[in-house]
Amino acid sequence: MKVSKNIVDQRREDIMKAIQENNFMSVEDLVNTFHVSPVTIRRDLQYWEDKGAIERTYGGAALLQAFIDEDEATYERNRYMKGIAKRAALMVEDGDVIFINSSMTALMLINYIRYKNVTIITNNARAINYDPDPNVTILFTGGEVRFPKKSITGDIAIATLNSITADKCFIGCSGLDKEAVTTGYMKETKVNHCMLQRTKGKRVLLCDHTKVGLSFSFQYSDYSDIHTLITDVEANEEIMDYLEEEYHLEIIKVEPAKRG
Image (cartoon, rainbow, N blue to C red; front, side):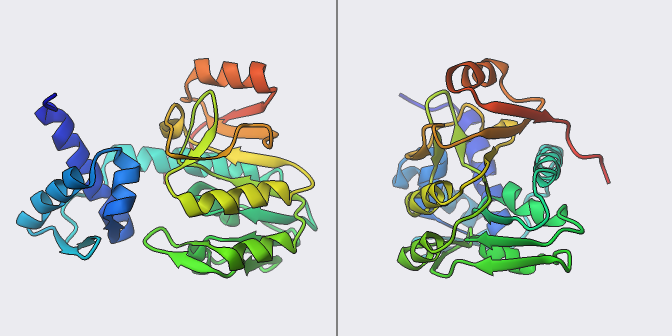
C-alpha cells in the first residue's frame, strides 16, 4: 500500500528534528522510533543528505546544519516536561536516595530539588551537564554509554544498581498504553526494571501526553511495579481512567510550566 506524501513528509521532518536534538541518530534508533523498515529510513536520510542538512555515516547520520528551527510544538512539549519534573521533585524528601533513568523528563528533576540532602543514582550521562543544588550528590552507574541518547547500560550498570537500595525511583518511558510501559531501546529495559526492583519506596513514572497511547518494542513494566504516574492535563483521558481503575495507579496531572 502506497503511503501518502503527507505522511512521508511528516516523518522526514520528525527524523530531522530527532537528528537536530541529538546531533547523531543511528538507523537502528530511527527504525525503533518510527516503526518503518531500515530501507525506508535510509531513503529518508538520503533525502536530507541531498539537501545538505546531514552527513550519512556508517549506521546512521550526523547533523551538518540546523536545517529546521525548533517549532512551537517542541517548545510547548518542553513546558509540559518541566511541569511534570517540577511536580515530581515535590515528592523528594531530605535524605532520600533516588534512581533517575535515561529519560529527559526525569533528568529535569535535578533543576527542582532544592535545600535537601539527596543522592541521585542515574544511568543518564547527560546529568554531567547539570549544575545541581550544593546539597545534591549525583552518582553514575557506570557502564556502556549509548549514543546519541547518552544512556548508560550493560552489565556494569546492572551490577551497580544491584548493590544499591533506593528510597524512590523516577523513570520515564518512550511510550505507554493500557497494557504496558515500553521503550525503543532493548538494553534499557534491564536497567529500568532493575531500578524498579531495587526501590523500597515510591516508584514514579513520568510521561507527557505525547507518549500516552504509544507502544514500542521493549516492555519493562506492566504497571505492577508502578505506584504513581505523573503526566499532564492533555493526556488521553480514556487511558488514564483505565490505568486508574484497572491498576489502581495514583495519577497526577499537571499544567505546563510557565513560559519564559
